[in-house]
Length: 244
Ligand SMILES: [Zn+2]
Image (cartoon, rainbow, N blue to C red; front, side, top):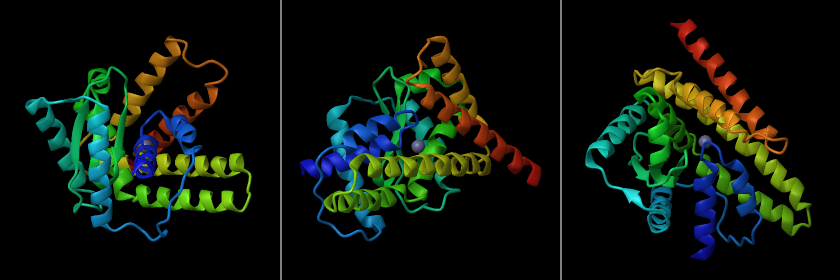
């Protein structure tokens, strides 16, 4: 059970907007998975998601605000109705935390922090964030990550350099983020939200971090990653509106 929890937490953290580095730290732990690498069925993913959700509810305080929960779940339903995985029982919960973050767990569980909701200025920005998380689920990133882990483990067993395998894994994380960014923008657009919501949110957040002097030399990589994500999304949004 402990091993399953670690895997699930890694998956949950990987999909967050800003904390891909934490994932690597957790990934560099001891792992023993004995399952095969076949793609996860919906039923398996939902069962796995239930376990992660239990773990998250154990680790964090969730805010129970019926009115706000309804707003978030309505936004989520609008986005999932235009996604490729309408069969997943998507939900969006609020974590009591001042940090600005969002993440998803397998099976359609999405979590946003109070800090994020406070920072968001419009419904479109919130929709942009939720759309990104819905996209991770639609694109089956959980199953793909699971296979990545299996691959990393088998490479390690063969004596491969663990730094090299983890760096390969990190490349895939970036790829998943980009995929979720553009797919999320598309969902927001199709669902009738302003497709620039996520870019606007990230841009303001990035500016705030710059003002706070968060980006020193060590964090410069994070700065360029977020900037290039914003540029990529803006370009994609332009291509969407040109097509119309
Ligand atoms: Zn993500």
